[in-house]
Image: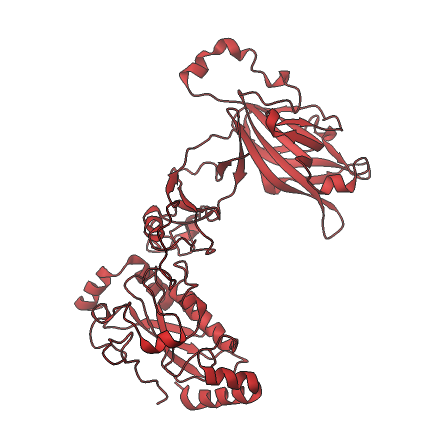
Amino acid sequence: MGQYPPVMMQNTPSYYGAAPPPQPYQAVYRPPVPMPMQQQQQQPYMQNQYGQPPRPPVPTQECQTTATIRNQVNLKKPTLALAPTGQPGVFNITFSFDASAPCRVTTFVCAHEDVRRACKITSPFPPAPAISFPKGLNHKFSAATPGGASHVVNTVRASARDLTSVSNDTFPVIIRLEAVLEDPTPAGAAGSSADGARMLEGLEAGCELPQWVQSQTTYAKLIKEDDGSWGLRVIKQKIWVKGTAYELQEIYGMEQKGANGTTADGYEDVDGNECVICMSAPRDTTALPCRHMCMCHACASALKTQTNKCPICRNEIESLLHIKINSKPAAGAGVTAAS
Amino acid sequence: MNADQAAQAAQLPRRIIKETQKLLSEPAPGISASPSEENLRYFNVMILGPQQSPYEGGVFKLELFLPEDYPMAPPKVRFLTKIYHPNIDKLGRICLDILKDKWSPALQIRTVLLSIQALLSAPNPDDPLADNVAKHWKENEKEAIATAKQWTAMYAQG
């Protein structure tokens, strides 16, 4: 009672047949068979195209592989904040960072960066003296850091507009972490005669970055929080490696799941770290430019022969980026060259 | 599981096996889906009419089939229980973008069925499949909803 008759067209096999089907569906099912009624009212089903008309292969969809760049200093974006000082309208810049080499920290307020002059930073407000840190993880930078109390944002001295907006490469707050580039090549190690000159302490704050410095620069602006206090929001981060600046961009879907992301049968949960298409292999391929890392290499290759849409956001995939992940996860950020 | 089923399961992509296991072990509220014994790509589905919809109190049977190229191609889904809805035609076929041009292989059986459940809560007469029902809905929504409730009471009682 109350059931539709099976969809049966003259001379055409059924899409479904009645349930249970009389024979295995693999034998009955032939997708591209035209269905007269469907064609009148809705798009006919096309194989391999998510139901879209076939499109010519997209020649730009090539899979690139990544080159790993070692980043020795990393400011942890979520930790960046302003802390009140005793003085009204004056705030300390505070954050946490990791350093795999000795490094130094400089901060600038309402500062301009000249990308054509090796990222030289100039500011109408003289920067506070640079602070040196040893190699180490989870360093805290705050007023409690010796010398840290002088790294402030003065909301009285600078205009609110300059502190909350970016214009022409002028940023409300710039924080630069600098280390001496670790050069693993024997030539770099052998160049010990030059090592004497390679002292961070000899560099002026915000100077043109030499080739032997590896730095990370964080650009931020002030934001009025809901409760009326000032917050500090990261606009972007760049790293400088061997004379080239790269903008750091997050890749979505790269989070590593812990042991609880693994189900009893030993396979990771559907929402874990596995390819959204086969749900078996680990994700290692990112769609660009949307940066959704959601597929394994094999499924991404299969996908690109059939569609150019990202499975997550349906934006066009211009290229695929295959990221080889070591068993021990390193820095969780990919890099693209900045202008 | 008999030998025949085991042989069938061995040929199924791992994704379909995992989706099936999860559908059975953690069913979505108001939705049940279980594979046919003859064909593990064919699912018998039941969706309960959502609360505060004209379909409340109804039990709607559907069939769902995973084509050979699933998940690159969407599942085929059809209502078996008669339903008065502007986006579902008299053969039970469903007008839903994710089943056609908006399909993505990141979607799953579960998300498809949740979308169909949502479609019951939010009929869309501006994108009709059943023209006469959509017309009824637009011209006299109150009366159309009354008809939908009647059909639910008549045909969708499990």
